[in-house]
Amino acid sequence: MKKGNRQAGPALKHSLGQNFILDAGLQNELAALTGLDSEAEVLEIGAGSGMLTQALAERVKHVTAVELDREMIPYLKVAVLNCPNVTVVHADILRFDWQAFAEEHGAFHIAANLPYHVTTALLTRLTELDLPIQSMHLMLQKESAEKLCAGPGEEGYGPLTLRLQWEYEPEIRKYLPREVFTPPPRVDSAFISLTRKSAPPAQVSDEKKLFEVIKAAFALRRKTLLNNLMNRYGLNRKQTLAWLSSASIPENARAEQLGIEAFVELANLMRREE
Image (cartoon, rainbow, N blue to C red; front, side, top):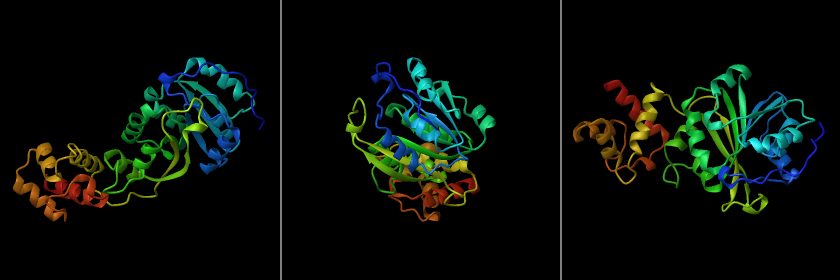
């Protein structure tokens, strides 16, 4: 598949977090790191100038390239002119109709060079929807990517990390210095893959209850798990201590010290006694 013709694009917008990689070789490397093949249906978020779009299009069945910046759309369409398996869509990904896309395309993969200020909102939204996402391949701020890989006791470990790790296996594929972007952002970046697990890491009776408990446990990070649960559920100390004891959780434990298995045990216990 030939590359589309390229021409000078519009001025990049800081307000939209536009920081592009203009090195075609590096974009091809990133596309290869996704491991996606000719059967893959891909939704690309923030397609921008279309360089990653081109690299993906050479490897996968179809790419839906979503771009928010209306002024960028004509340049994106030119970039993929010779890529018949690319559909360009002008849309705000935070208002995107994910259910309609899934109904039309079935199981799909996500690729994105996300504006860093929308990362948490978008990933939180995706965890709230029941979508057939098989994998996500994301360019994130280095610290954000490391948080998604964090374990108990590590910096950044929290509800979003636990929620994503419940369904996906995160792996940082490549670190990228700020200098490879145009214009350079203020931080370094990392390209991370999140691959859907064949099964959750533990058996839970009620997933909704599990993540409700996790959210409550992290509500006030300076407080112990005991205090956060008492505050959230209006429990007395004796009852809460009994639940923690039954789940083999120390009285003075904080949420960030616990693995997913402990939260599952606690959620299962609380569900049985409700």
